[in-house]
Image (cartoon, rainbow, N blue to C red; front, side):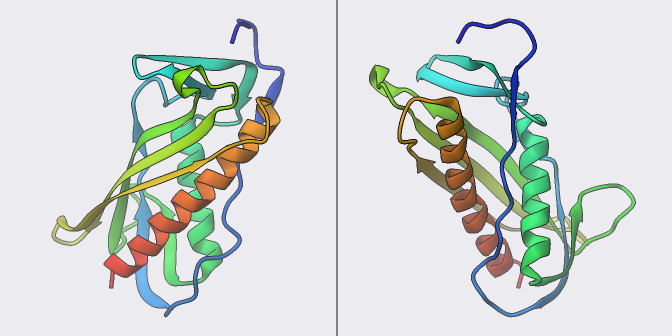
Length: 180
């Protein structure tokens, strides 16, 4: 909390190094830029003390707005898996077989009940759309959480990374199972 000037510390999160093994699918998946409320569609690292307000860590920020960062990490994670023919950010220039739409519902450090150490909470609403006929192939919700060892921004960011890995693993595993 506090601050007001430009952030002095920039943080990023990491892609998954692998996904659970499974068959290679001869499909192309496009990943839309995730939607999010204005409170989460920002480079600022969100925290909550209650359900009615948002705050942000002072002098700290993500390297990119959270939805853009999440999209890039989902694309990179699925590419690394080698489980599909191709994966890309959704652009008008590329025609894929499926489009993954992600709604970022939670992406914050939650200091519930004025806890001294937050719990990082991530929640994604998922829709997988078959591109050719725009039919919904499936919907799901993914949640993940992690706690840092102390109330320290670098440790909170590490907890974000662990929770995001869990959320991405569940998201991409569901996507591959649903796209078959």
